[in-house]
Length: 211
Image (cartoon, rainbow, N blue to C red):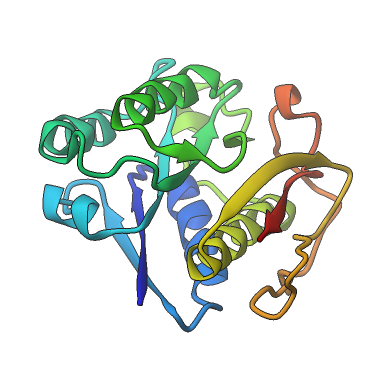
């Protein structure tokens, strides 16, 4: 049994929705145990016991959230040199950009020698006023579908054993040369998207090849 650890922190609900969508996708793999943990609860033992990771955080003042940083502060050195080569992905819920938060996590993952399976999924809510920033967030179905399909791809890769993932523009599904363990997201798709401009649109999905 493989284990996928999804660590998230969420203040207004957006990041939680993205993490839960990824967990839902991953749970389609019966051979993968999916652990969805708030950052404040995740411990070094959880990181060491997992075979793959999804890190999900809001971007706060152009950085990862404080509680997400606390998670990395507590787990980085206990896991150093002990989780090399394991796959990971990043989910960011941002107001207008999200790139700085993604880069922070990428630097940490580089120190751990993890393998990124795709570019970060960044969802922009375009919240700019104090009222909008602290208001509860509702993530659109297109963006949740991207998160769900990321969970599908990562969990399937853990089962199969060898995973190579690249960013595919203009596709709405995960493709594989071994379609048995893979399923497409069944989440209803809408025309609305909150993808950041840097990502182009909600069509920037992962394409996975398994061997």
